[in-house]
Structure formats: structure tokens, C-alpha cells
Length: 177
Image 1 (cartoon, rainbow, N blue to C red):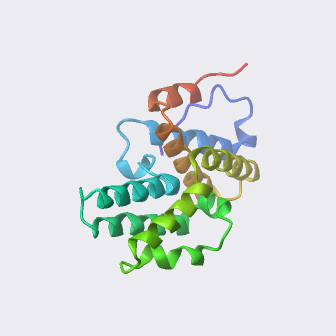
Image 2 (cartoon, rainbow, N blue to C red):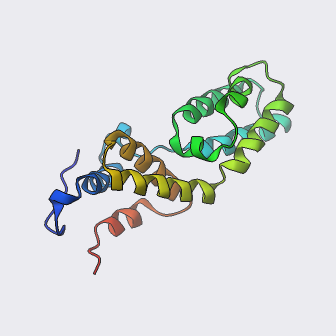
């Protein structure tokens, strides 16, 4: 992990999880970090949108049907691991997983499942829940891997909503009065 200068911090000993969050942000936003340490290109909500767009392209005849299976497989995997998405979805994952995982799911049924998911995972709701879970984890300071996972999805959401990596990085380095 990239070292962060702690000279601007009032009491670093009392805020270890917050420092970890700040260091994670630095690492994710550093141009020369390895890709595995950077934020993802898409989180679960964005993958859901991508799957819906892919179905539209299939319907328009621009791409072939098997292309949707790659997107839904990744979506299904992310859905299982994403604490933000799991907190937002009102039904158990088992209600969606079979349709997403099976290549034999009719496209009409798959579209319905994806639209139901998207209603629950829309961007503003995803971001608000991500912020809430992240703040809670930072305050508790017990689960560092969860802080990293939530930070990663949060940065992904910020960038997807149009906020530049440079702005996020500069904002994290400002000293607040």
C-alpha cells in the first residue's frame, strides 16, 4: 500500500481505519498503481445496466445472443460478493441467481429479472447505501477487507457518475478547517 503522510492528521493513533480508507483511496487513484489495486470499471448496478444494454443490442440485431451470458455471469458473481447490492435488493439472491446463471433463460425473462434488479440498484440509491455502509465500517474499524471492498465500489460509483479521478484525489488531500 502506498504510504500516506500523516502530518496533517490530528490523532492518527485513534483513527486507524480512517487512515486505511485514505490510503486505499490514494492507491486506487494513483495513476501508476497496478490495475488490481485500482477501482473497478463497473460495480453491480452498472453491470446490470450493461446487461440491459446488451439485450437491447441483441434485439436490434447488432450482436448475437451468446454475448449476454458473459455479462450476466459477471453480474451474478458480483451480486454474490457486493455488500451494497445485497443490502439494497429486497428479495433473496436465490430469486435472481438461477435466471442470471443459466444460459437457457429466455431473453424476455432475463430482461425482466435485470429490470427488477436495476430498479433496486439505481445509481443514487447505490451511492447513498455505499456511503452509509462505508462510514459504518470505518467507524467500527473491525473489518479492513470490507473497508477496501466498499471503498473500491464507492470510487467506481463516483467515477461512473462523472466525477474525475483527479478531483477525487485532490479532494482527499485537502486539509479541512
